[in-house]
Image (cartoon, rainbow, N blue to C red):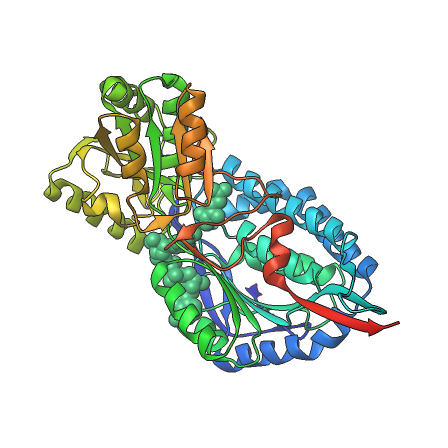
Length: 476
Ligand SMILES: NC(=O)C1=CN([C@@H]2O[C@H](COP(=O)(O)OP(=O)(O)OC[C@H]3O[C@@H](n4cnc5c(N)ncnc54)[C@H](OP(=O)(O)O)[C@@H]3O)[C@@H](O)[C@H]2O)C=CC1
Ligand SMILES: O=C(O)CCC(=O)C(=O)O
């Protein structure tokens, strides 16, 4: 069966593209239609046509659709988790966790539709009332990456719909399956025609058409820094609101007074789980002298015990890298690290398993310095570098010495250092004795510096991006 694009409430065919399982490249997950530029323009026109009615729709209608979608996602979390693990390569428990998060996000924003509010204020002039309300922005273009194939579309679509916008979703070409399943659920949840449109296909065709359209009022993007810049430039050109979530080079600091077991578990999770393919992953482990050798030994032991295998196999801790080109990028950075003089203390080897897939053992560098490319550029794989520092002050300085600022973490038992780090870390999200990755669905998500642009995503803060404020004055 060819999975088609959804445009104006109709399933529309297109050139078929095979969705390949990175754990077993002989396994075709399914065939998915690639949309053309013309299809994308039709989807934008459909979203525009549906906007007046949807932006004025009753909150009970929006609530019912979002709630129904959330309920179905949660009821099918095992099946959708298998699909996600099969197309992206994260392990089944991680994939089921991601699907659960998507369901919870729809549930959260279903609730938000019933909490829409404004403000009524007296004017500074007599006999005048002032009302402040939030309105939909319009047609929202959504461009998503491959590493969270259902959660990221969910955390962009759910608030967009809750606040009365219509959407055109362009998921990553590598992983269209989960996005297709999500849009199918929304379609069957009685979303009116044109409110949610799906255009799968290539960024250079579908994504670029969204960027070039004057009819897209807002664009929300998660992906690489390079594409993010294109989104920004095109959006300025069209006077369009835009929001970018891009890379990270997230630090995880380990202090002498850390609980070693807590530090090792958080570091292993931050750097290597989900194959290190999270923008919140930690690729810089900044460790003070007194604990350095014990930490490296314990982390290496932990890595030795991890099972790298088929994402769907019970007992797998780390699945494959998502595809050949990401695997090459990871391998290239491992070579770069070696040539820069860092020591490859563990892993970094291509692995053979029962099925042909993109398996790589977690790579841990030691003796790295913060000026090396492996410490400055986003690798986006299971590759981390330990940087030795003298004390907390140096650790903080090194942690902040990066062009990114998404998440950061510290392992310490000192209240003083934990408090200081929370206040002084130049990151949007700070974790104490917790991994830098793996965030809640109901609170703001986003970063600083080169990691993010625009208002925060998720939780109530999402309203900032998906609405525009109106101030109305009335003479009594
Ligand atoms: N912050 C994060 O969460 C992520 C960061 N990355 C980083 O980016 C690197 C490369 O990953 P990659 O997937 O290529 O990232 P991209 O930024 O290329 O992809 C993200 C999305 O943008 C689309 N896109 C690509 N080109 C254009 C364009 N000209 N106009 C509009 N949309 C476009 C992609 O389409 P298509 O499907 O064709 O690729 C995809 O849907 C990774 O190695 C990692 O460093 C990647 C994924 C997530
Ligand atoms: O760490 C998380 O939970 C979210 C990470 C993420 O959104 C990303 O990698 O794009």
